[in-house]
Image (tube, rainbow, N blue to C red; front, side, top):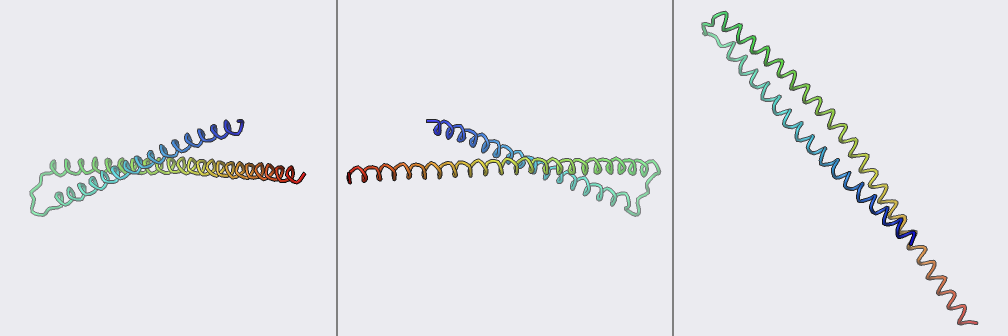
Length: 145
């Protein structure tokens, strides 16, 4: 009876650990999706900056000083946005590394718990076989007497 209660508790712990592992893996997946989105935004900003630089450098344009100053001010803001986006991508990369570590720890724990369960079951089977063998030996001994 005590073994059954212990087995039920261990099964509950394993289920909880597996649920935690699944959640950690899902969180890691969401983080990776966010990184892809952030990297896409960064690429778009860089492409936009390149296009804008090309427009500024177009020959034959009779640009006034104010217009050129406005464009360079805009380019400066665009550079700041790109730097900010790079920081976002970096921060999400760090978050991904943390989440991957959490997931790996939970995965290792699940595997350890499952291994413990397998050992417990194997031990119970050995004990059951030993009990059956003792009963058989006892019956044979009683029949001889």
